[in-house]
Length: 172
Image 1 (cartoon, rainbow, N blue to C red):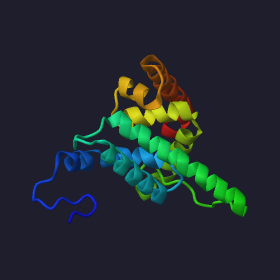
Image 2 (cartoon, one colour; image 1 turned 60 degrees about the vertical axis):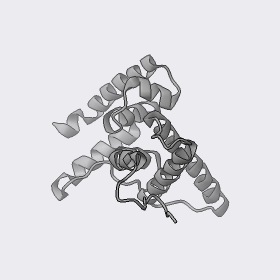
Image 3 (cartoon, one colour; image 1 turned 90 degrees about the vertical axis):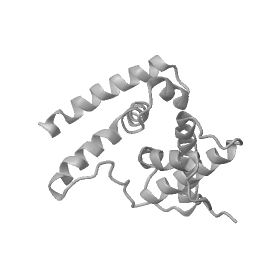
Image 4 (cartoon, rainbow, N blue to C red; image 1 turned 90 degrees about the horizontal axis):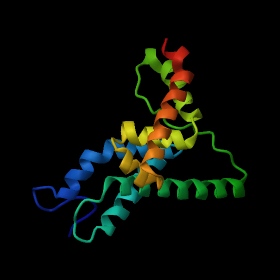
């Protein structure tokens, strides 16, 4: 009997190979969409299972579909957490995980860069994350976010311009 993602044969399936190759970008996007590392891992796992279950013939799903599934799962989780927090009158003190791996000397710079990225409008932040860390084309980003490709390209350009202005002093 198979359990989880493990394959009983010695050779991994196309799906398993694809998943191993895509996990870093997918996890980074999930981190950007969620409030903490644990939520990002949960969202990614749920999205991967959902995408795998929808692929009846065992083929790998289109990457934009997986990113869109992660985004949808993250929104569902955030709404659920917000409702629970509201009911319990609890405010989470957890801060989001850093988007940048850094050495001790670079912590402050990374924190400032993270703040700049976080302060971008969500529409710009999503496109930048999908383009740079997700490696998607503007057509795939458009499909993921349900916007025209030209809109995705414009949001990317405007987002980078705004990020450059905000980080000009940080990186100098």
